[in-house]
Length: 163
Image 1 (tube, rainbow, N blue to C red):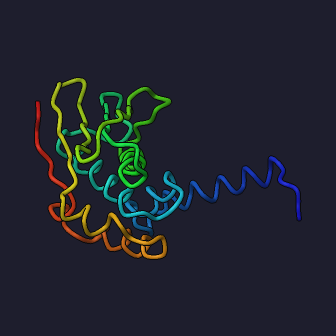
Image 2: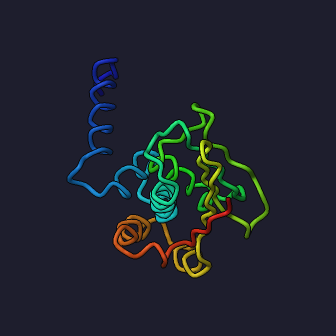
Image 3: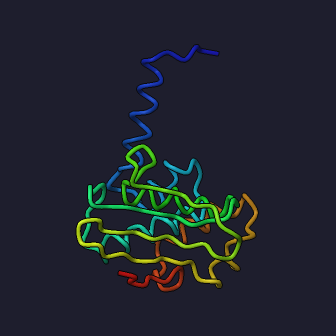
């Protein structure tokens, strides 16, 4: 086995970053997979939610006016939404504009806010989405995640203005 060097590590990171931002790919799938580590329906749903929030609030990716708070129980399927949100919005824990608040099951939601205007949107997965995609075996998740890139957002989540 060949030892890992800084050069091979940097090359691998460069390839991963280029793949995640490949204009020929599907950003919702590629970018959420890059952050989450695997193609997963709830991460892709989070990406779609993040895109919709940015559009509704008139913000661009990585805007300094952006704030994202994800309310989720400590369950992988619901917490993986935040990986998609991060991939779509550019918000991150390191920038202090992304927060995760642990809550009871059944109340999962994400709030995205434009700090400059004070306007916010609340995004919530549809119960039908959770029922259909929540119990998928690992082998079926990548195909399901790919399908989610092409369906209308109204079949995945609701978006409501809250401020």
